[in-house]
Length: 320
Image (cartoon, rainbow, N blue to C red; front, side, top):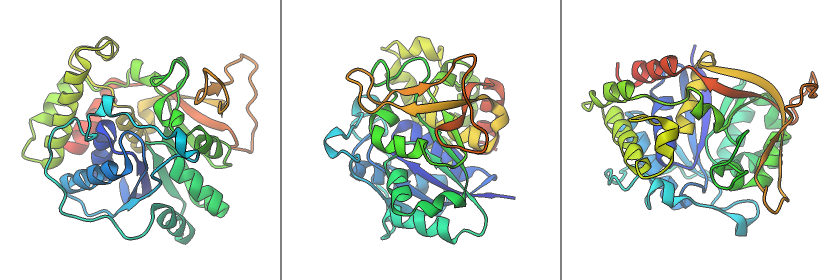
């Protein structure tokens, strides 16, 4: 039976691949895609998301969300990673569809409150939309089966030494989400270096199905990611000819959690530190606390992934 899901994203290169996987997955019934400022400005995120949905061969509504962080002057973008357009400057055709008229926050609240069965909520961008929805209507927490998020890092960040981008882009929003009493799965940066990469053999199989627009788009973005990483230290972390899009791994784990190895942790968000703003602080002590019966600041955290199961899921979902 398909699971009903809402996906919240800031569509850059890794979000695009993740969206294609979610939209093509037989495990998911995607009710809507909500957009938030992040990898690029919200206007570009909207355009990119519409492009991806059109390439997916599905008809799923796209909603406009927050254009800035909860503290507006702290808003972030990352065109140096995703290209000025957010999709690696690959010049995909302009979308012909339009976003829905309803705001992302209103759509999320309405959809969750009307749900007869709990819904999966997947977040692969800054957590601004989620925080706004939770703050406006706290009752939605009882309507969520699992909140799965690409967020944070255990060992080191990718935007600062301490902080991962999605959290750094709006730590105040992340704090609200982490403190919500709802089941949570967290995919930090760390599993990307421990099996969470897509190896060349799987990229080649996806690229071979260029007759399918979703495979054509995914393969082009994967290969552009490899090209953009070639002159940086990221190449050595990923392996030759491989990619490790964090948002793609997050959606894959939402489809099949057996791909990952998880541990339960208490995790909190640092909002004040001079050098550590946006850091996710994990209690990893041998005698660490984990309270039963609550999900506040507690979550299942992915530490590693099986690269063969991961790659095969991508091929089976996209290329067959």
